[in-house]
Amino acid sequence: MPHGKLERVYSQLHVTRLSPERCVGLVVVLTGHGKGKTSSALGMLVRACGHGMKICMIQFMKGDLYTGEWDGVRNLRCQVELIPAGMGFCGIRGNPFSHEEHRVAAQHALDLAAKKLSSGKYDMVILDEINNALNLGLLDLQQVIDLVQGKPLLTHLILTGRDAHPRIIDLADTASEVRELKHAYRQGIEPQPGVDF
Image 1 (cartoon, helix red, strand yellow):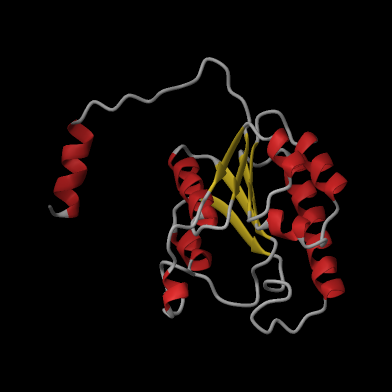
Image 2 (tube, one colour):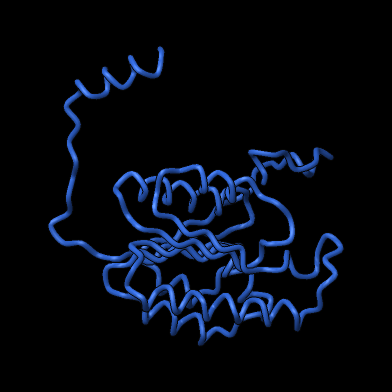
C-alpha cells in the first residue's frame, strides 16, 4: 500500500489514546545474556517519541565502534539526545584501554546521567550497558543505587546490560531477563549490521 494511502486509512481509524489515572516514572531493568536488551530500550525510545516525550540515552560501554542507532535516532523526528560515553567493551575484542581508563569514562557517564536526570528536562533516561559497567567494577553499587533512588518522580529510567545486580533489580518496577536460546555468533556468523549493531 502506498505511503499516502496508508496515512489516509490510518487517519480514518478510531484510535484510542489511553492515559493512566496516575502517572509514574518507572524504573525498568533489562538484563540477561541474550540478545535484545538495547534493542528493547530503543523500542521504548521509539514509543516515547510517538508520545512527544523528551529522551536522553547514555551509552556506558559503546563509543569505539559504530552502531546503527546513532544515525537511526538522528533520523527520527523526536527530541532524543544519544550520548556514546564509553570506550568500548572493557576487556574484550582486543579493546586497548585499561580498566582504570574504562572506569574514568564510566564515572564521567554516571555524572552526566545524574545531571540529565536532575535537570528535569527528560521524560525518559536510558542508561545503556550500565549493568555491565557496575558488574565490571567501573561503577560502585551505591553510586547506581543513589542515582536510581534520586531520579525525578515522573521520569522513566531504563537500565540495560547483562548481569544486573540483585539490588538494582529490587529497585526496579519492571525487570526483564533476555535469555539466549541460540545466537548466530556461536555458529560462526559475524555480527550483522542492522541486527547486531
